[in-house]
Image (cartoon, rainbow, N blue to C red):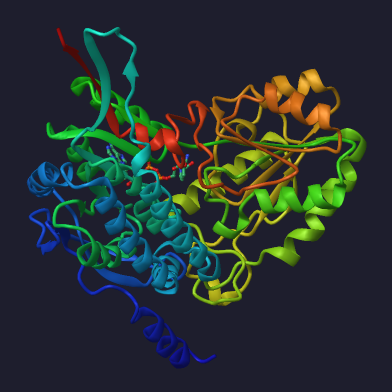
Length: 495
Ligand code: NAD
């Protein structure tokens, strides 16, 4: 393709990008007082134009809109809330391909895979719409002279702040439990990839009453203003451990509940009795090279029993190029995207260099892809290191990039000690044909979400979240809905 063809082609793809990039509250667009900042295509550094950046007074206006809406929304019949949510789910589902292209252009993930994000988001909205009648209280036995009951009430205005790796899924899917429970929401999209949020705003306006769901784009300062706002009653974050810690400190001043979905350094364990072909597929798939490894659930520490170590290392190296090659994220055939930014690219390359310096054995990748068409993007090849030890940075720290660490193991006790020796505890995957071993390991691994002979999938209704520094609270199940309520007990004397 010539340069001219290329630019015509991207102009056609870019026509899907939303034109209006202001703040969205009260179902209306508002120019930001905080000004605008540009957003980029990380796969080629194209400037995609300006986006609103909310300052404290913008956040205040959005929160007040959400507070006014809350007073009405909390009174709306649950079944009516569910009906309106299902309308939103339908609109999101219909626009799945459009959302996928916007996110592919703005966050560098392959378009083919991003279509699934929109359909999962729609399914999550439908799921929580179906749970509105589970917002039940209790009655206590009191004898004939009194009645004692409890009810679940919404909290008020809630805030949702999300990371860049699945921008629309994290906003659209996860607004659902908050509004199903009768709260209103102010959401802050990721500063690196806010464009799909503006498209979502059109659908919110077409399905929900004004002020129920609001969007304030911006960076960490906008997020902090949202957390600190006196009318905000709960914050849910998807992000890094340092941000989670910062938000907890801010929430402590307000005595406000917080849900945190944070990072991971997740183990995948291959036992000597595993079906090796499937386990190798699991090791490659679980690393989420598709999103350039930028996934909290990536199983980035692959523990392989020494008796099958050489075979598994060779199998992983042979399989990767068949499954994942960096390419233009907007191309339907692309199987691996770019990193989000120069900062993330530099972080990943530095961690690769440190791993080499620490003595890990580079088996695959470790650099930019050679394809000149990708030279302007923040691409890193799928990268694999063998002989990683617990003393190395690569063993302990989240890369949030396409870097798989392979570690040999001999003894189950030592394995468990090494697996649990990091500060994180989000996901884990175990590969074995021995049922007793599978359950024994699942019981002893300090992680919130464990797959046996499986990887990566989330299941609607299955509570997702982390042990240790990987998070606080659970999402994607009934407990997430209940976390957006507070219990009120009422005692009635009847005599
Ligand atoms: P980040 O913590 O830098 O940013 C996440 C969000 O928080 C962004 O919207 C950002 O603007 C906002 N933010 C940053 N500082 C803030 C502050 N002081 N107050 C309020 N808001 C603030 O994370 P990131 O680099 O964008 O994302 C990568 C991290 O997210 C990784 O650690 C990854 O594992 C984690 N993650 C976790 C999950 C999960 O479900 N557990 C899912 C995806 C990503």
